[in-house]
Length: 95
Image (cartoon, rainbow, N blue to C red; front, side, top):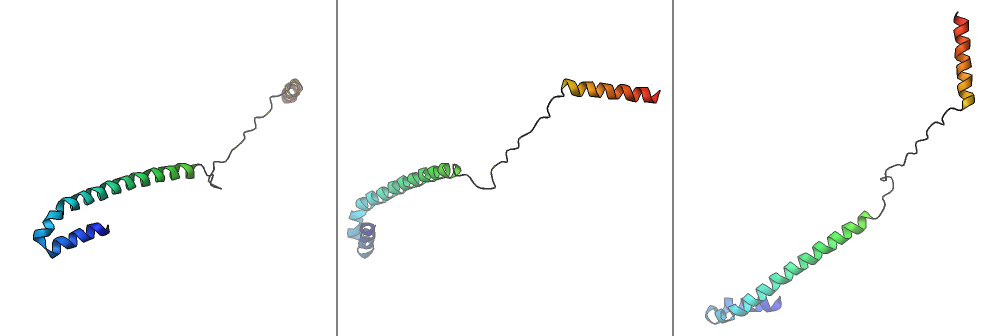
């Protein structure tokens, strides 16, 4: 960056002779622009890597709760017999 500033100062001090340094100034500016593009690419890749790694870290109280549904046990033959007998008794009492 210091060389760029020196070239600009040279042009400002003596515009006629400073014009000769314009090609060198242009090369420096192109190098700086390319460096900026490369740095932005690196930053973007690092941000993507960082996001991917952060997504792997579990956050307490932000995880979906696991609900275990307990299905009722199917009735046994004994339960079925009891139910049938109770219904028959109710029917007899109503008559």
